[in-house]
Length: 270
Ligand SMILES: Nc1ncnc2c1ncn2[C@@H]1O[C@H](COP(=O)(O)OP(=O)(O)OP(=O)(O)O)[C@@H](O)[C@H]1O
Ligand SMILES: [Mg+2]
Image 1 (tube, rainbow, N blue to C red):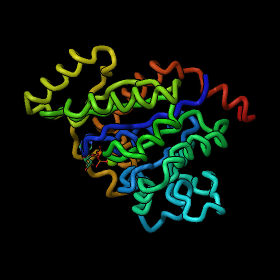
Image 2 (tube, rainbow, N blue to C red):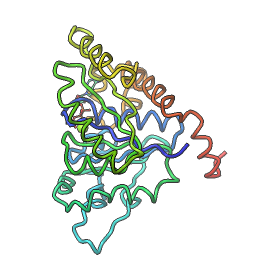
Image 3 (cartoon, rainbow, N blue to C red):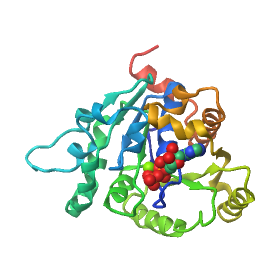
Image 4 (tube, rainbow, N blue to C red):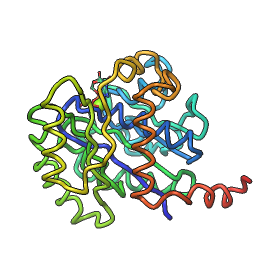
């Protein structure tokens, strides 16, 4: 099984992309998969789950925005370890927004740079911004899979068809790209509209929708303020448990259950 590069995408804002990126990256690492999270959103919310802004040095901005084309910065220069064993991060900062203004040739930069870390990680998880712009294109061109978090709220499906059209366009240039599935997030069991939204998603997108549903919980909301993923901030809570169940389901869907041991053997670890 090859490396899986999963872009977490939905141009709708506030649907749980960054929370999902941070939580599944941490969960995969805790299960022993060598994992890298790349924050490709200038808002740097996924970064906040691991690092304080003052601790961010070289970021995805220096790697992908070529201020001086003579100076090419490899992705390894921006990789730092996290508190979670087996998990590294390429953080983001606000100036990565400049990538949207880079010439269109820049869209293949991420894909090219990721080839240098192909043998190091089982999973690369990429958080993306809430726009259908050049950052998202670059991310999807570099990915093997797209995971779509959808908030269980009214109008949840708005824009999903635009996202799927973008996916189709990019798949023409990156035939390896697949949709791993749709994850229902921010589920509030006190409202009937949440259950109704998830049901509609299942009716329309059938087996693309994961069985696991992520509920709205206070601990998931608090975690980034403490620069910790949910598994470290509040390990025995519903949020941690549900992301664990989700990762179980996703690994199964990706056929990755056996893969970590192979990488471990290849790297000489027992
Ligand atoms: N399951 C959850 N329970 C409670 N709060 C959550 C949950 N998931 C996300 N949140 C909170 O909701 C807000 C939006 O979540 P998040 O930042 O993950 O969404 P996003 O899709 O990445 O947003 P953006 O489009 O701005 O990048 C954040 O304040 C986050 O902490
Ligand atoms: Mg986000």
